[in-house]
Amino acid sequence: MDADRPIFRQVAALVEQSIVDGSLAEDAQAPSTNELAAFHRINPATAAKGLHQLLADGILTKRRGIGMFVVPGAREKVIQRRRDEFVADYLRPLVAEAETLGIDRTQLHRMLDDVGGAA
Image 1 (spheres, helix red, strand yellow):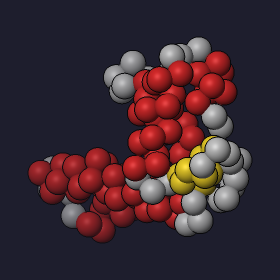
Image 2: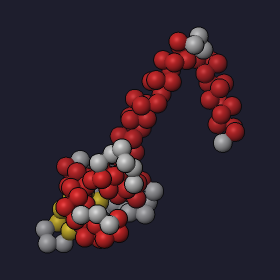
Image 3: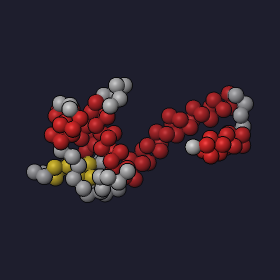
């Protein structure tokens, strides 16, 4: 777990990651509040808050008396949101710093290709 983010957001992020990596498929039942609480050794109310965040975000849907399930299209929705965050958190600052340092787009592309080839 990440000490910088609230635990309920970490729980939501872990469930989202399971959706993105395919271990939690669309229309599949999400882990229950109690399962998440026991596994992560957290308060069930905290786990519930994480699941309700995903419900509010349209990633999960509640089926009365059964539990929460992954909505169709959830994977694409999560990926798109994470791509948007990637652009805002990493690419915009990278391009701004490159411009500050006098690195043009061609040089920046070359640098990215070099780093990508090393990975």
